[in-house]
Image (cartoon, rainbow, N blue to C red):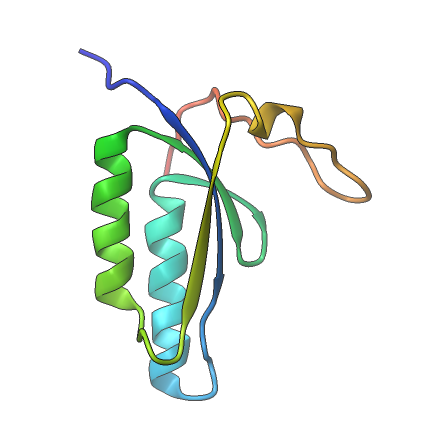
Length: 102
């Protein structure tokens, strides 16, 4: 049975990388986001997922970040909003309908 994709999220993050620990957290945050969506800019991901995926992803992100130093912003978009995004400059369209393969 396929999981139902119900959410479109725009996830942005700012991780303090002034220490080696911060650099490790940055890589771990990116890896969590890569598991669920498509990187569209250095610290920006577009994610189409189910409610359950979002709950798991949120827990994983909270386990990684330092709440006193790092920031993650998540914008829940209306269905289809990611497909209607306007791209200016060098910004390829993200293939949200294609499976994530690593």
